[in-house]
Image (cartoon, rainbow, N blue to C red; front, side, top):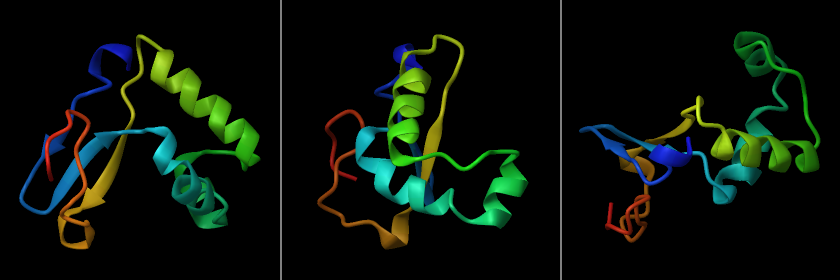
Length: 86
């Protein structure tokens, strides 16, 4: 993901942004849901483990992990990974 860490993909309804440290609290909360764990084939992690996993994914040359943001729920003062206003 290192190579694509600044890449954002933008559509009419959503934006795909790199999985960054600011996403950790929400992502960690989502991944406590048994249904999501089952559907993603994941195991529950502590917040510390989640932080380490995010760093490993960020630094892995063969992974490209995105978070999907719904455009209609975004604060329009937010920036994408390139410093551009969304």
